[in-house]
Image 1 (cartoon, one colour):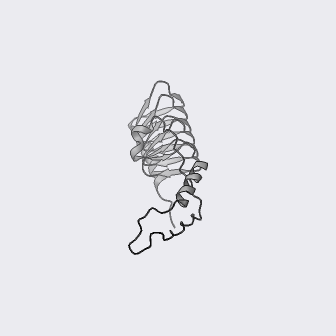
Image 2 (spheres, helix red, strand yellow):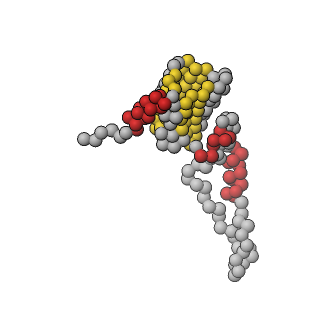
Image 3 (cartoon, helix red, strand yellow):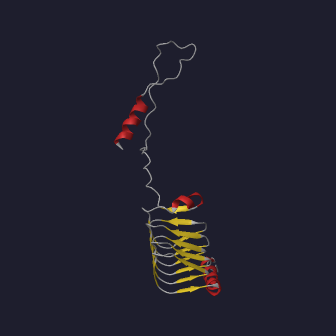
Length: 182
């Protein structure tokens, strides 16, 4: 922050290097510098190195980084990467990636989910659930397809296949319909 303030002061106090306009005397005084903005200016913080899973998926997904904590229901419509802490339900018709720094305490209901981090709650997906190498899941899974890599930890029961996918779609349509007005 100190370095930024010094650089900012140098920029503000620097004399103009604009050429002298025709008809002005060569020794004409330069106008005073513009006043500093009334709101403080801060240098952007360098972003931390992304986790390994970010490199191939980062371009088209929304990200909740590792310093984000949310309590309550989280709803989104496109794809989302969570690398922070969530306490509550996660609902979407899109795909969810639970990052390696993430910790979710609550149920997940999405189209598909890939878990690199920790989930304490049930996962219900209409398509595919993947538990990656260091993933930890304490809860039940209901999915059309399930992939568990060596090294993942899963404590719960699973229902997989066409019936599970149909039941998940029925649950998803219930949770995505707007409340009755009337």
